[in-house]
Each structure stands twice: as structure tokens, then as C-alpha cells.
Length: 307
Image (cartoon, rainbow, N blue to C red):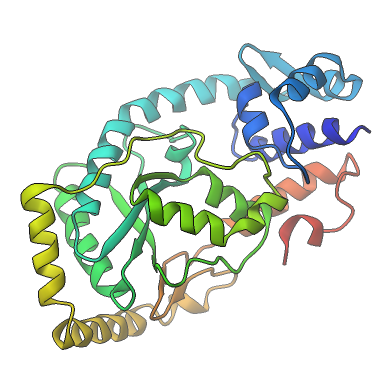
């Protein structure tokens, strides 16, 4: 098996877990490999590899695992839902950017891959905040979530971390994909630092140096920028610190039992608010590994999960 052929196959098999047929450009960008590869190499392998002709099918512009043609219509429906949701996601991202102590807003989850399940799907975000104000920033975000819900929009800022705690400790293909597929909307300088401090993802996805679906940066201006600075000035001292500690302890008590769930990836501390009590990573990696095993691409789970 040629290395590039194997890399393409495992990339398509990973996407298959999400019922997501891929274009050649997406295969190139999200290629699971150990070194950078050109788009021309991808096109050449897709056109001439005996292995890929045997294991993959094509329905323009998508490639998918043989016998899985039904996921093309699934993707088309999800693409339409994503196009409907995208303007809402941009607007919501701008409101999150206006909140005190928020330094970066990035769209994450299925919508970031244009794979939203329905036109009322959740809008998932990663927020990066000023140090020592993770819980306060999240508190402001929760208020925004409640206001958006009255308009039928579901905002989920389900991962909040301080800009002094950017390194992701879990190293596997699932987490690498989560990092590279996010779409920064505010704080591109912080996003670049986030990517730089997680350079390990290049050992899984060396071609994904930036976001595949790019979005122009937006920043609060005029009155909103002034209001944000005023709020940060007022809450930047001892009052804000006391509120930060109070909110942290309140949420720790509330979620204590949830933290004990098997495979929970939640993390609630001074620098992280990660409410992933039911970790999606383990079932995704298990399904992915099962797909790889029949082709002998990965011989042990550690090669895939990083656990």
C-alpha cells in the first residue's frame, strides 16, 4: 500500500464516521498523514491508485467509501442547513466578541465543517478569555445564550479557556481535527498563538495550517468597544476576582456528579471551562479504528487514540 494512498483512505474513513463525503480539496486540507502533501499528489492518487479505485467511489465532487453513496444526499442536506445557519453563527460570534474579557471567538463543531444536522442545530464556540476571568466571561456568555434562546437560536460556548492555557493536553486525531476545523471570527492574533502552541496537530494533519472555511475577522468598535473596556475596568480588580471565585465554586458544586461520568472530558478549573461530560471523542475514535483495522493501516489503538 502506497503511503499517500493509505493517507487518503484513512482520511476518507475518518470522515465516514460523520457521514461526510469529501471533495479532493477537503481530502488535501484534512489529510491524515505524517508529512505535507500537495493537492496535485492527491488528484494523481485519486485518479490512478488501484487501492483507491477499489475502496472509494466518486459522485462529483465527492469521494466516499465504496457502498456508502447514501451519505452524498446526507451531506447535501447538511450543507443546505449549514448555509442557513452560517449568518446566524457570524452574528452570534460578533455578540460573543463584545463580551467583557473575551479575547477570541471561534466557531467549532459540525457547523464549522458545513455538516450541521439541521437548520436549528446548535452553534458551538470556543472562547478564549483574559487570565483570571474565565468564569466571569462564561457567565456573560450564558446571559447571551438565554437571550438568543428567546429568538430560537441555540448558542453553545461549550469550551472556554484562558489565553495563558492554550496548550491542549489530549493528543489524538479527534482533538487534532477539533483544533484545525475551528473557524476564528474574532481575535485572529490569539488564534494564531493557539495554533502555534498546539503545533503537535501537524503530526496528524500537516496540510491544515489554517481554517478551511475562512471568515473575515470582526472586532467591536465605537460604543461597544468603549463599553467592553469600561466593564473590564470595573471587574478587573478585587470585585471581579471575588465574583470569579464565587461563580467557579458554584459551578463545581453543581456539576460534581456530572464530572464522574465514564469517559467524561470535562474540565472545570481556574483556566478551563470544558463542559464535555459525555465525551464524543471515544466513540468516534473507536469507530474510526474499526474502519482502519480491516485494512491493516493501524495495528494498535494507541496509534489512533493517543491515549
